Every structure is written in structure tokens, then in C-alpha cells.
Length: 250
Image 1 (cartoon, rainbow, N blue to C red):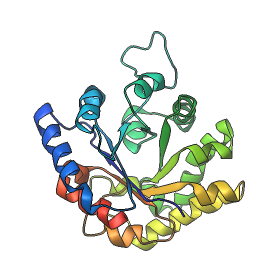
Image 2 (cartoon, rainbow, N blue to C red):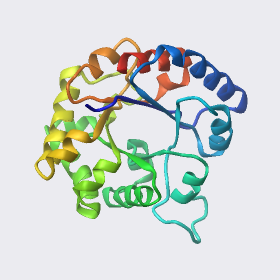
Image 3 (cartoon, helix red, strand yellow):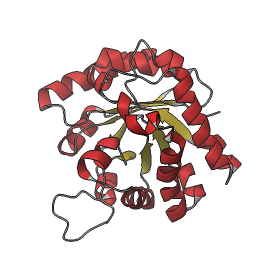
């Protein structure tokens, strides 16, 4: 049975003071969370501080992005070995904001997945369609293309070392949420596409939902058979909301 995972993506938010308050609130409420694995992904500059704040707490540390190379003349980049050394267990790759705002391709995302996996990090691979792509009826085609880029580079077995997050781009930060049925349909498609190549990997891999999951819709979403938790944006910035989602997932 797959363990649920709830990962908080803090994006470009936070200060020393607000992060101390947030982590303190999360740690204080973890006693009410059972069964679900929990992770937080702060901005790069706060990774070390958050690692210290989390000391002893059952919360994994993750990063929001990673370079596709290990070292060299790549100003501003942060490599997977660096993240591993800072105590990270997870790293997000291919988030829709990286794809749309910074033009990161499927192939580039696949190289990031590979770099993270090589260094012992667990990449959280984000896939999902734009609103116009859903309206055109090509959701599965888009998601398949994004997923296949990793499979073509690393082989389907590599997905067993990672996590997949389905995030309909039209539901990120908009307040809109895919219905549980819509989300489940795509999650089932993802698992089925992997199963065509390796049923064992498909059964093992966690597939998270990542589009405006909140305390009031979390239980219904994670109650779907192929939804194994959430990649949480805005709601992860409030300890009470994040904990409520973790509790629902567990």
C-alpha cells in the first residue's frame, strides 16, 4: 500500500521570522497527523535554517528546483549534490511555473530528474495541462509527453525512485480545483501509462495532486484510489491549513 505524502511548496515566500513561526506551528500540530509522510520545500536560502528548525521532527526537507548539472560555470544554479549535503530528501522538478515562466522544456526537466536521482534525492516530477489544452481535449497527450520525456531518458524503473505530481495549470493559485473525478481520471491515466511498461513501478509510485488543494477539499481528493497525497502551494504557508491537509491525507 502506498503511503500518502503531503509536500508543501512555499514558492517565493517567507522570511526568517515567518518561517520560524510556520515551522513551529507545523511541529506543534504533527501529533494529530498519522500515516502521511510530510515534507516542506522552502526557498534555497532558507534550507539550512529550516533543517535546523525541523531537527528531530518527522518532516522531510525538499528544494523547489535543481540544476541538471553537478558543477561548473553555471551562475545562480544549485546542484543536486549541494541539496543532498544540505539535508534535502526531495526536490521539485518541472513545476508549471518553471515550464511556463522560464521556458523549461520536457527534455530539460527530464535531465533535472536524472540529476536529482543520481545524487540520491527523490524528484517530485510535476506534469499537467494548461486550460486551453484541457478545453482542446489534449490533457492526456500533454501529460503523456511530459512523463515520457523522463521514461525515454531514464527508463520506467527510474520513476520508482521519484514522485509524480499532477497539477492542472489552470488550478494553480487560481482558487479553481479539478473535481475529484477529473483529478482521478488523470491520475489513473498516469498510473496506467506507467503500468503498460512496468506494473510493479506503477503500483509503487506515489502520484500527488497539485492544484489548489485546501483543507475543505483534501479528504475528497485524497480519497480517490490513485491520488496519494498533495503538492501544496498557498495552503502550505499556514500551519493550520497545511496540518489539516496532512491529517486528511493520513
